[in-house]
Amino acid sequence: MSSFSLSEPNSQDFSSVVAIADAKAILTKVGGLEGTGAEISAYDPTTNRLFVISGGTLLEVLDLSYPSQPTLVQTLDVETFGGDPSATSARYLS
Image (cartoon, rainbow, N blue to C red; front, side, top):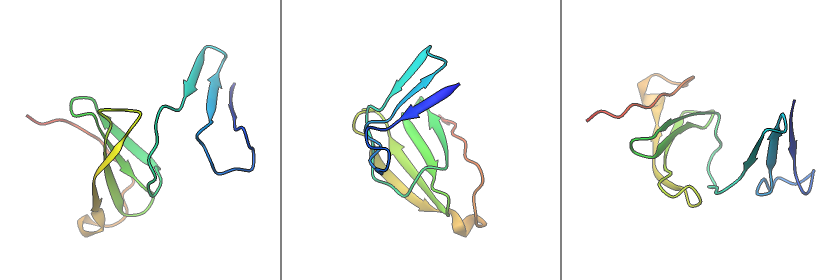
């Protein structure tokens, strides 16, 4: 059974979110970025990039080289490729 807690339950500030799953794992927020949201994401460990679909037609590319300070690398509007994305995946091609 997982549980989540906020210091201020009615707040939209998620900086203090701590998740405890089965009392064996504890997740603590180490960084954040103001963005359009994150509905679907894929991480490429080779480039330290996180590809995030916001729930609309935007694909945001984030650099997670420094997890405590993620940076937005690029925003792509994928509507020109056929509309509403429902999945993303990451693969490094050399």
